[in-house]
Image 1 (cartoon, rainbow, N blue to C red):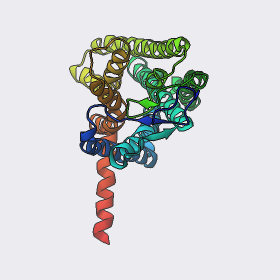
Image 2: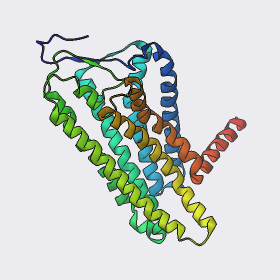
Image 3: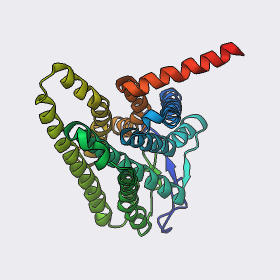
Length: 318
């Protein structure tokens, strides 16, 4: 498990899981499995409903489809490996596989953040410029925004595994985590990691500050426009359309910020608490988002009900 100091690198790492709480791994596997199943079923249902209903073929719902696909990808990058640790004691992970998992997790996380910005822009245009909504958010623009979101994540994270490959791992290959998180892997190196740590902080801060700033600007403009509406009913309807998006933002950014800060300045935070939160911010939003959008978005709620009613009618006829 632990290599010889004369050997420059390891062919694999050992993922501990949740340090200090190994005896409870079987119990932790239950919420992880439930969240993963909820993610697959909920996001699959959202995509199916939007695909089948022509009235939902609008930019807002196209962005929601992109978010659903990304949520499934993020959850699939972490949950199966975690369940392997919890159920099968499959702690060993190959060096290249570890870097691939790290790249995918961080890339999908940045794409998620970008999609939340794009969805905030969508709500801004819909509420502040409703008459120009169709002319501003055209299909080509929707596609471009989706591609830019993916490209930004893929390009920004690419240097991380490349920089890690230049590091030497002399005495430790034990990652005290449930997955290959960037800083958890970097901290094991026995050579200078200043560039790795600096680039990791630059990426995290630039994404978080830029995206939260853009989302905040959008919602300041939205709130200004909403409170200028004369009708109380119009104000409630406008705020209602944003409620699901705001819930998603809170579910995504609050645990992510906690995880980021405890890695850098939270020395007194127990490793088990940090790792649980680091797993929560990747597993909970993908599972909760379909529920939030299903409950808060009337068009989706209505179509889900119709879908099940049609299925029930077909079953009763047979």
